[in-house]
Image 1 (cartoon, rainbow, N blue to C red):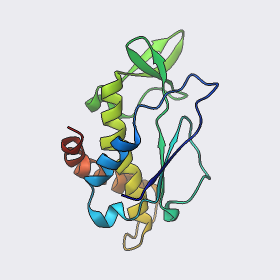
Image 2: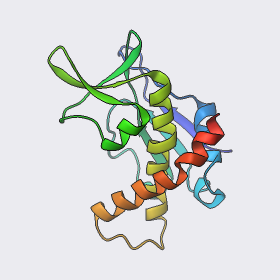
Image 3: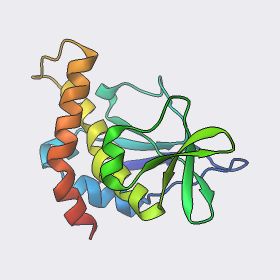
Image 4: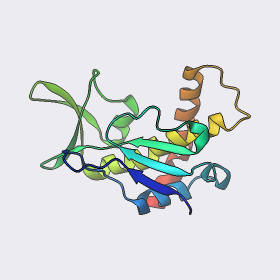
Amino acid sequence: MGVNLVAHTTRGTRYVYPVTYRDVVSALGALPAEHRRLVRAVWLSYHRCGGFGKAGDGLVNLNCGMWPSRDHLLRPRADCGIPDCAYGFGGRAGLVGGRIYEVWRKDDYRRYILAHVLPHEVGHLIANAGGHHLDTARAEEAFCEQYAWEMCQGILAALR
């Protein structure tokens, strides 16, 4: 599969990425061919990177950098917790030193990124590829969440 994997450098930071190129290719391989063809590059980042490209450019942003901490991975949260869908994959909110963090076991977080976040982000490419008349950001997010859940089991099977 001819997809590029690009990552923000973690040199000089505490961040690590829980997925590999092989993981991303395996997960994308479980998607329908017409959807895979929309993906040109997957960008690993440890912060939101709006403006690095538009969905129509075939770029997928996986905001997945985490801080290693003993047996878990931590991610600071500016808001009140973690996405509801993360709980089904083993993620939880935790208070560490007075700050709210996402707390994950590495394998659980890897599965969450590959089987939920990646197809959700591919859903944005599909939604913007035409034929889907989604007139609001809320409608697009709902479409992407539904797509992620529809693809989830196939991706999990491909990762085994």
